Length: 289
Image 1 (spheres, rainbow, N blue to C red):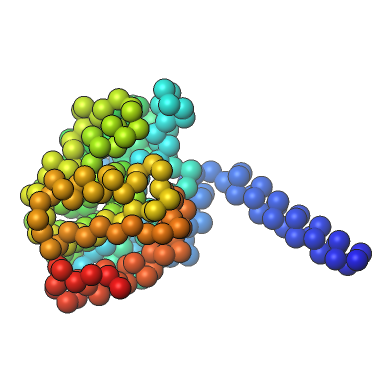
Image 2: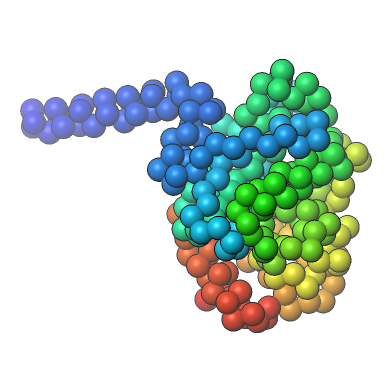
């Protein structure tokens, strides 16, 4: 019994110390612990009046480039008070990028994340609240993608967006001719439907991803939603699909036992493999297993 008590006590100390060490890590240190084992190295891009923070790995120059776009991060501290810094506490998009075994992978944070105010003096709460999909935000990410594509010597790019990054992926795909696939995870790909659902102020100064859905409906797309997601539920995807019109290239999947930010990391290797296999067949209509 004494040994059992000692074992339990040791276990509790270990768990508490691990939690304590995580709590004391800065946002950048957390990102480092995720990206370093995957050999994703820091690269910042000057894009318009913003700095776009990125992490990248290029092992086979000239191959296709997988580009991950981070979510909105810490946009609000309460229903009425915007955050002063939108850097995410837990960058889910980066976690997904770190799992991807593709030879050429880059993850891009949103403008104003992981940067100091002196680096991006234009940053203000508008750009992670009402203007989170403002034209200048979309253009900044687009410019960073162009620079990354040049570094990777790639000709084709695959966009993968988490949460708000999913909306950016759709908007960017609509203004480029080198995007060969779009995958979104818990993606806010129809923000009018999103704000209506949550009864919050419409993002009137933001571009609407769903408004370009029909324009890109022949690009292979997979939109994944968690069955337990109360933030961006499946009805957001359903609204987008309706507006996109008839196309065998559009796929929406509701994944059981997954919420907005829990469960994706465990399932992503399988989802990534299955969507990659579907693209190899060049058959838009092929369903996932």
